Length: 426
Ligand code: KE4
Image 1 (cartoon, rainbow, N blue to C red):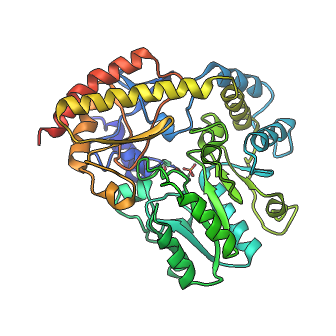
Image 2: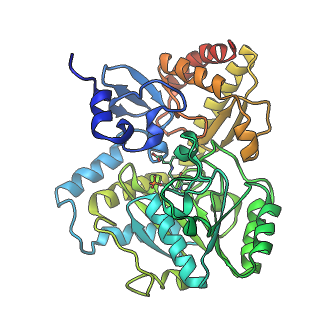
């Protein structure tokens, strides 16, 4: 019998995927092979339709194939795909990012969030002359060696929050504090006086689902970093242009020294970026000695898609409309859980959210880990049967787009009624 696509995939790619969290390992079963997307919907290879709350793990804030992005890509394609030389368009995208995010005075475009975060800590280490970094358990900053220490997202899903292959000497330079526990960060600074180059933090912990910062947490980190001569890096790869026109830093009114971005700024194509204070960014090659480079950084297709996305987000009312759609989805899920008698804590910030099978509150890593994974698993598969595609892990955020219309909401509401009943049928 002919091998299935999953068998062929597993034969030629590790785990059959090009990124682990897609493999459905925490929910069981084989991943859905997607044939195409349209608006809020994706269609699998058998033609089944699902309301998509993965949205490529965040980039597709306008849903699949928005006209603005398609039009920009077609125009860019007519001129070429990559030049390896400056283009006017990448300057405009850089200027747009700097205009929208006040703390970002200068920016470097790269090809992924991982490249952005790896480069940002290299810059922090060079600028401070220090080697140690502070991250938070459950936060995920891409797969750079220094970050794969008690990481979230797929690393957590697969039970390898600290990855093999990371040299012990390097991992030893990564200190890990508890998210939303400022004292745990202070204690580490006290234990390692003068050693910290930076604090890198997700201003909203989106890789253990969706855990917003407690009041004072981010402010406290900014003060701690400044007092101890370290830099504060906001990893806004997920939250950038997602939760506010100026990202989480715009929502919470806190300016970090450096910011990393990705996902939304690529409009569905590979773009990452890091930027911040001019005196820091001027140290990046070729302006300064801190080396970082990339063959396809700022390539015309990704820049065109990203620019089109950011231009669309600037339209008056975009975020207000997205907030309404997101609130409606949350209300539908919470109502269905209540009717099923299923304890649920749904954390939401704008158009990113996560339903936890827990009484709540869910404000830190321990509470996230205490949620009922078995109920999540049953809930996930029941939603899939109902034509809804949530993130295939209890540690991934769900995303809403401007394309999530009343039809998507109705399908979600119907599927959720059955899914929460299935979840509690222990
Ligand atoms: P990428 O290298 O995957 O573009 O970005 C890494 C990254 C950095 N920082 C944050 C806050 C992130 O959320 C990410 C990537 N997010 C995961 C999903 N939570 C990507 C999905 C995947 O790994 O396939």
